[in-house]
Image (cartoon, rainbow over all chains, first blue to last red; front, side, top):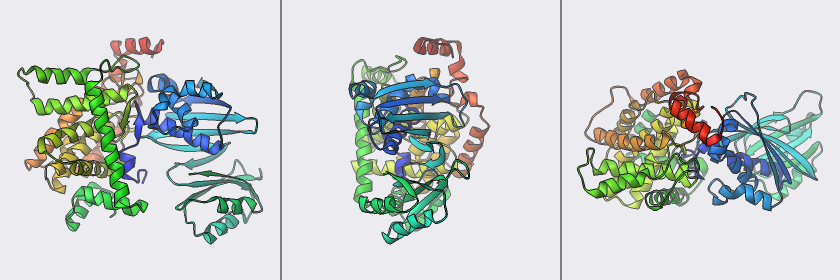
Length: 220
Length: 295
């Protein structure tokens, strides 16, 4: 079932004009910010398909930047987001791609600062819902609807079991799980776990300390 | 409290002797482990946002979208009603139309709205619920319940067909909104769950095949006027269902037809601004004016 809640249908509360091109775009920006974990200094946003063609009229650009600044879909500051980004020292560049994407409403976001980078690809699937389909070259599907752990780990037996054990000991149920790697033998894999309960700092710490775990990002 | 189709939803409501709104509220509480208060209050908050959007569109002077393609028509309808001349379709229909257009115009001007189910179709449900409440002297609770009915119907449509113009054309967007809304106002008027489902079928049948062909790709022309007419169709469909009229084709099959029609619809007529009204000489001229380039 793609749509699970009554508020997927009656909602979101949002700044117009388009649930897919404005609200969904803001949610992609906001998810990218969470995945990066902090405010970026530079962002390069590549727009594809219908996003590339109509973004100025729909405010797709300002919505993505609003999301990157941490604004929700209904935050009226979205309208001023390009100016606010400038004032806060976030450098934003837009690229209109004429490549044909798999999904008509696709955006690729490259977030950077002196500590690192994150590259996130999101699609806006309608009614304000979005999915993150790529993170740093790893394919995945992430809706942002449930709390999620994104764990970079050594591509080796037992890594998944160790994480699952920590969750089980803390009575955290796994709703959905996926494992992604670029190709076999690259030694790094990404494990994505959507949980029914939120995962607090203590549990996050336990997971980070595990052998074979490189990094942990929490999307709540 | 599980349902996937409109038939299952109606059966559940009838077996448990509950209105559709109550089935949806309880399903949401169970599925997301939330209290009734949380669920109902969130929806009541949505109703408040809808009301503010209606008031803004009807009262704010000089409301225009950034492109200049839309704004101010809701107020023209209101002024026309106030003039007191003969109204061909009647003041109730035109009240609905003015409210539906109002929300849609606020959306185009980057104002705050509730996507129902999408922003492109955001005017229909508020326009009808607020007009029906006025006619029926319904209280706030009945209006919030109507939003749950519409959400329940939209949930069935979205999971069996589509709700976005990019996926299934305008029939999926304004069509779904009109159908969901017709079902909602039937419950407000005291109709049965089965009558709500019939209103949905009658409304959606009259939207089948509608393509998504927005000028310059913007949610403005023809979207604002399609919200207006969606509101009018929803109210008439609700009255037809209340009169005991039934759709020859059952509700779920109408939704299935919408899905197949949308699947067969060419990409040029699914929000790409490559066909239909967007591809007319005037549509193309406007696109060039707004974006400074050819389509």
